Length: 157
Image 1: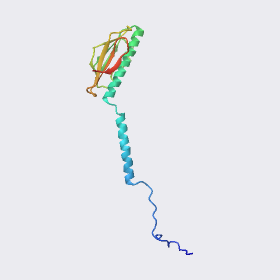
Image 2: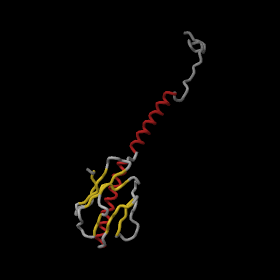
Image 3: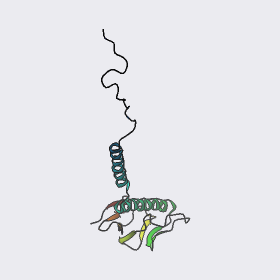
Image 4: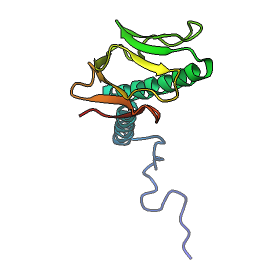
């Protein structure tokens, strides 16, 4: 039986260097690229387009019409809505705490009557108006009622 002295094995003289702990430059670049792509995807998904803002504005105005219509029927006082520069105004509602401004300043009334009467009669005349936005050219939404049903929002022709 042959015993060898320590350090006499082949290759034992060469110092074994332990592998350095950490990441290589390539691994770090791959991770940074993945994070950048994910961040860009989230940013595009959360971006609020002009079209979305116009839809939100139309839904809000439709809900305001219905609330004013119900309040007019309950109080027996005639209520009307009319657009003004930079916003709109409700007349006939008690108190002055009704909204008077658009959420998006680019919103305009593109077509419709100068005044929409919302009550106090339970059945009102058929009425409609068209909203447009400077940030979403070519897209407009129509808010309308047949006088019996609630105001609805639809794409304008």
